[in-house]
Length: 104
Image (tube, rainbow, N blue to C red; front, side, top):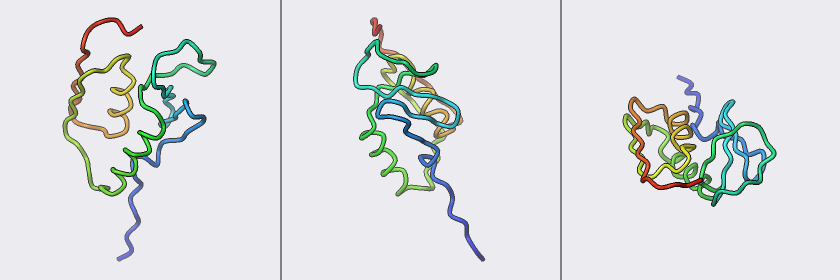
């Protein structure tokens, strides 16, 4: 029986620039720290940089059967990671907690 390799969830990511990541029709602004410079479309702020996301991709490509049922995030800043992980991993439940304070 011919088996068709399953697409890895990270294959859905497209880098448009060092700081612009597409996940399907969602736009993420990948950054180390908050800056006011952005001339792109509406987006989610994602405090991760390209090399870190590539490390995640490398890790999950070796574990292609990984499918989390639950995700818990602690420290979400502007919330971009909630959207990113929820859309990418499709968990049954996703709980996120901010740590308080102003990040803007």
